[in-house]
Length: 397
Image (cartoon, rainbow, N blue to C red):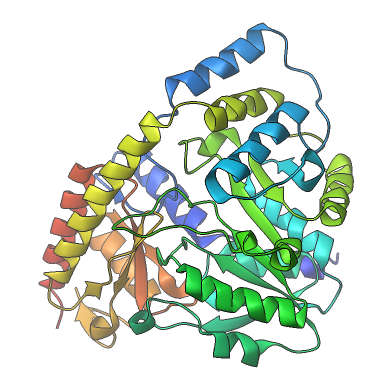
């Protein structure tokens, strides 16, 4: 029996795998501390939950248009105008079952077999697999910690071939927390326009920025780059709505129509109740968001300070999202608890088995000398996890 070669080429998500392992260990009664989840530990704000309850009670439980309701699309257009200075109409918006679904739609709409997509590393683990799923070829350009994990215009230019169709831009970035400044984005935009290359701009963490950093949407510079940019966003991170599964895109009308057509045959509409909740999220007060950002910033500062105080590991202060990339380069080749560390996979496995702390290996992000910590967890968990890190590294030789 032969199976799909394309599907067999797709690797499972290591971030979801480590989160599932953590949850199973916790269910088994082990005192495990987890830093793998890419979701806020805050509850969805009450006014959003109430909007969902009201939607159920008023009978908004039927099919909606496949690409989302007009009311939600209008709320999304208003959000882009208000937050990003971008003018879109409902024909430019496609609402999907989470931002992952949006990205699958995006690559499906713009790629033909063999088309190349440039992806800076470290990258969110799903980007290359999504490109392959849609018969494209991921082209990885590495970035360095000393450059704040940012790729240069020269790297972008050098990676372009006649087969290049798009570049993925994730700012703020998962896993690095990198935020590209406006001049850097303008340089990227100029290259994309000059080569007629799409920019898949993943802006899911746009509101989670710290220390004076500012998110700017690359599509906001001029009409040419706007036409080439496909913005991917959603309500999951900003409003603590990961399980509600509402993502959306903004693009030129032709791409939006292609994505909407395909979605009408695959999933049809996103959850009707979650769409009503998303309207309340986008149009409602931002008090809870501001509290969440302040708490994330407090945790971020603490985690960075503690990690940098420990011999053998280090990290840079992220400007956005809710992750810290811990450099373990000095531990490579050393032995911990009788086990040799040759990559972040080895370190992560030893950390979990010896100290019951779950972090995500950087191997899946193409950053084998790093592990990712999420500070979307309580300060008590952060303190306990780093205390255990100190205990673990006392056994390094």
